[in-house]
Length: 259
Image 1 (cartoon, rainbow, N blue to C red):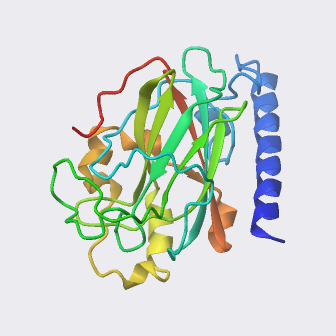
Image 2 (cartoon, helix red, strand yellow):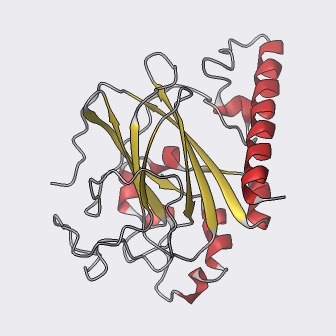
């Protein structure tokens, strides 16, 4: 089975899981939104992997960092010539006020490669907290998409590497209604990071990988709520499948842009 076909089968399977879980919650006489409006709570589904919203509490923002480049590189596959473990990242966006999908939001993502390098900043130090400007034309592991009618975008990328002072993460920025409405970072649970760290090319990087609880951005911005759900079955395959549900205020103006 091809990676792309396998991904769609996985999505359909996950949606069926979500529907059955919500029906189960309702059968216990709990007050549960319909699958179209926002599904069961995380507690009710426990460890199950789901694709749609479990609740509509506001997702936390996380600092933008110095490596954002405001260029509309419209594409779903952002890998280019980089190597690493494949990762499909699906983001589902809803308005936290209504729990309805946000259509037409522009989503930027960017991340380091397995060695901790960001495109556009190949010759830059990675620890200075100052505004930085790209000096080279490369744009690997960067991309932009617009959410569909379901509030969804999917990027084909790689599991991010680490660099001094940071745990593995992926940056994202959401534009809605003419504003920078939300800025965040995607994190990974420790067990997933351990599995990836043991594989090539990540195990060729000799700098110490910082754990989530050691990362100041993760702890300050409540990073536990920004950990992506990785399908556990995909850990043994050629490509990881991850989904993160984001409830944002599309009328908000974020103040977390890097000055």
